[in-house]
Each structure stands twice: as C-alpha cells, then as structure tokens.
Length: 250
Image 1: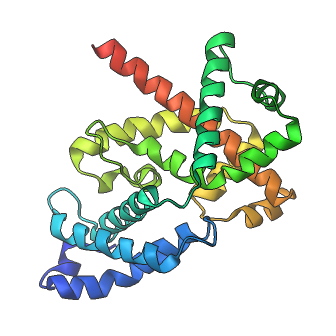
Image 2 (image 1 turned 120 degrees about the vertical axis):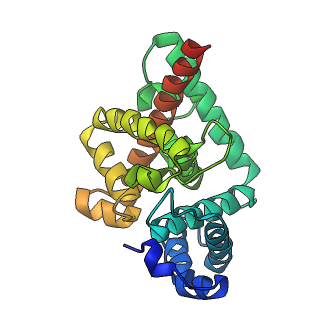
C-alpha cells in the first residue's frame, strides 16, 4: 500500500515520474477491450493527465492510499477521453439508443425484462442478427457499465474501481458508491450463472472476451452476447432503483 509516508517529500515531477507506469498499465487494460482503431498511446496520455489531477487533488486526510486514489483518477480520465472521442460510429450510437428504447418500452408494457427472442422480434430482426447487433455494440457497453458510476453532482467516475475499494473515495462520494455497490451486487447475484461469471471475470479479473470464452467453453461471440445482456439489464435495474429513491425523497 502506498501511504502518505511513501509519497512525502516527493516533488510533483517526481510523483509523475514514479507513477507514470501506472497510467500505462491502466490504459493497456482498457485498450485490450476496445477496437484496434483506438490508439493505446492516446489513452496513456489521458491517463497521465488523470495522474496529474490525482497529485493535485490528493488529500491524505480522506484517503491513506495514494496509489489506489491515483488509479481511480487515471481510469476516470481515460474513460472521459473515450467518451469525447468519435470512435463509435453514429449508426452504432443510434442502434444502441434504439435498443435502449425498445428494452424500456417492453419493460413498461410487460413488467419484466425481454428475452432475446422477444427483443429480436421487437426490433424486427432475426435472432442471429440480434446477437450480431449485441456484439457490434460491445465497445459502447464498456462505457455503459462505467456510467453507472455517475454521482449526484454529475461527475463521471470510475465505477468498477469504487466497487472494489469505496474507501478510496472522498467520504461524501463513498456513501453513494457503497449503496451503489450493494444494489449492483444484489442485481448481479440475480443474473443467470454464465452472465454472472462474465461480469465478474471481465470487470474484476480483467480478462478479455477470448479468455472468458475458454473458461466457459463457448465462443468469443457468445461471451459478447452474454456480456451485452448482463450490462443492459444491470444498467436498467440500477437506474430504476435510484430513480425510485430520488422520487421517494422528493
């Protein structure tokens, strides 16, 4: 653990030099899940910016683990950069929005999540085309899952990092993420077994789709489908939960 004593006496430039490799590690993990068109060096540059932000904002009275705090800021900066990049085509964005609307509409009409067959029918495509669509939306869903971490102040934060170590957050933010972690944990436990395994291995063990496919003895395409279904369902359920909480509080 990198405590306050481990960084005491180091200048800003020395801290940047010491922790720059961390930005490279985080960027490489994220890049491994993205299309080859996304340059890893661009992600590393964004990660370094996040590191500098961490150095400037670190408060030892709120967190005694600088490395973890820096990792959160680095990952958040990289994800923000991905959101600002036009690396997903407009047609894919439209399809993702269309799928979101169809799922929400089905939920309102039937009071439950739609099956794959029902979603394909709702979209007017066959089942195989539906699975291909989920695979194509894979990059969008990476950020979709991370966006569960939007705090009440509107700032986008690295969700999976907070899930693993909410203590690294400022106290006012940690409360939000502790509750978020509880809700997501409850919903993940309700997922079908294979979807639950995919979420665990992908986001917490940092395995890619091909590696997960070997674990489950299924194709990479099938893992992509399982991931897409799980993320879409989790995002919808978590947002509904917090919408109800906000409504009840008003």
